[in-house]
Amino acid sequence: MVDRATKIFWGLVTGLSAASGFFAYDTIRLRGALAQATATVATGDVVSLVSVFDGDSLVVRNPTGEDVSLRIVGIKALETSQGKDAVAHYATAARAALEKSLENHAIRVLAGTPPKDRHGRSLATLFVEDEDVALRLVKEGHVLVYTAYPFPMMQRYLDEQARARADRKGFWAEPAASSRADALLKLWRREAP
Image 1: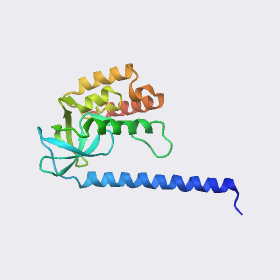
Image 2: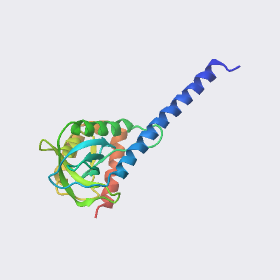
Image 3: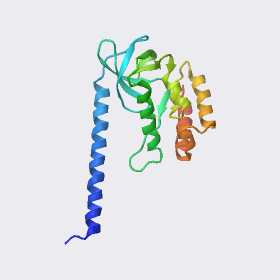
Image 4: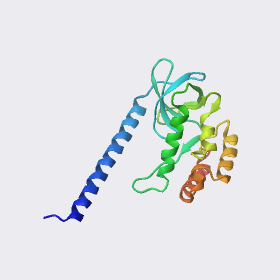
């Protein structure tokens, strides 16, 4: 006969396994959507949101109705590692903030140079009602300025990142997240051309 504590333990293990499976399936589904989206966007295109993968990657529908895998120029969202992660909340918040910024809005595209990244995603800066969406995410402390590849607005983004940090906005208010952000910024400075 199994005692109550053992039943509770195995119930929790089963529940956590099911939750992990659900989130793994969702991640695989979104990555598949990103991989299948092979169309492109051009400067001036007005696109609509299909899905958000994370705080800097998404799929949009271009004017011809094709899905385009897109990476936003100049930013990088914090990512979570396996298991318990002190910054998981901030990765989720970045994804939600990007989705909220774009959902049910006409999104104007400024194509990046080069037009695609090494993963085949289109590179672009996105605007909603003349507001640079990435710059807003930086100001709110949801994403980092990705300095490994210089871009025209990089100094403005860096200035806003410094303000967000000084004001302890978003992940800058959390020591563990700030520490991870600092490590990434240091790595990107070394990788910059």
